[in-house]
Length: 350
Image (cartoon, rainbow, N blue to C red; front, side):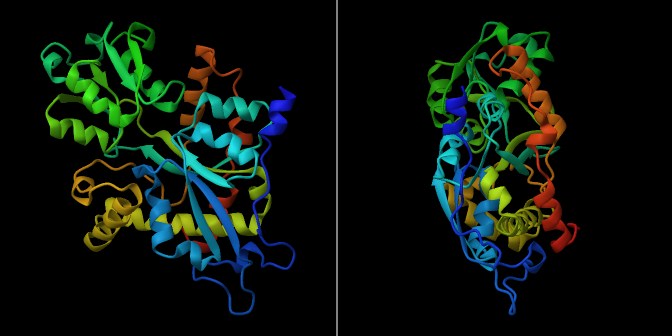
C-alpha cells in the first residue's frame, strides 16, 4: 500500500515561479503588474468536458488565465477518479470532477490532493441531475417507492450520484440494495432507456434533456430537491502545485472570474453574457448551443465555496457501503485558502 501511495504521490507543476516571482498580492485580476510581472506557468488541467466545466471554459476563452500568465492545457478524462494517478506522476497539475470513494481512498493512502473550489452543485433551481423513468412504466412508476427491483442506470459506482440515488430511494422507503444498478456512460443511457434495457436513468445534463426530447422517458424529479446543495463536482490541486502559492492563487483568481461570469449569465440572467457563455460552453463541450439554451445548468459558486458537509455525507455513504476504507478528515482535504485569497483580491461577489 505504501508503494501505491508513492506512485500516486502528487507532484511538480512546471515553471510555477519561485523566489523571483511576485507575491500572491501582486497577481490581481487586472493582469500582470507593470513592475512585477508574474512568472509564466503552464498548468495541465484534467477535465471531463461536461457542463460543470463551464467556469474553466469561460475563464480560458475570456483570457482570464492569460491575464495571470497561465497557459492552460486541457487534458480529457472520463472521470475525476482517473485523474488521481496522472496527478501523482506529474502528467497534470490540477483537475476537476465528481468526488468518489476512489479519490478518498487515494488520499488515505497518502496522495495529498486538495479539494480547492466548487465546480458544480445542486442548489435550488440548478438540478442538472435528473431521475427519468422509461415512458412505458410512467403510469406505474411515479416516485421512489415504486422502483423496487427496477434496473436503474448511473454513470459509475462509488461516485456522488450513487449517493444521491440512494438518498432518493430512501424517500420511498427503499435503498440502493433494492434496485439493480446498471452503470452506463451518459450517452449510452439514451438508447438503453428507449430499448427497455434499463427502467430508470439518472443522468446529468444534457443527457437528461436529450432523453426528454426523444420522448422515451418521463421526468420524475430533479435531484436538487432530493439532496439540496449537494457538492457534485470539485476543483482539485496536487499538493506540489498547492505549495506554489503564487501560481495557485493566480489560477484561482482566473477560475473565479470565470465562475462570476457564469453566475452573471445563468443566475443574474444577463442576456449578453448568457449568449456568450452558451457559445463558449458549446465550443468546450462540443454540444449544440440550441440544446444548451434549454438544459438546467449546475450552480457554480462565484466565490468558490465548497459544501464540505455534503462531501462528508457522501463519503460516509461510501464508508458504510464498504468501498471506502475509512472516512478522511475533510478539514485536511478541503483547502479554501486559495479561494479566500482570490476573493480578497477580487472582492466578494455581489
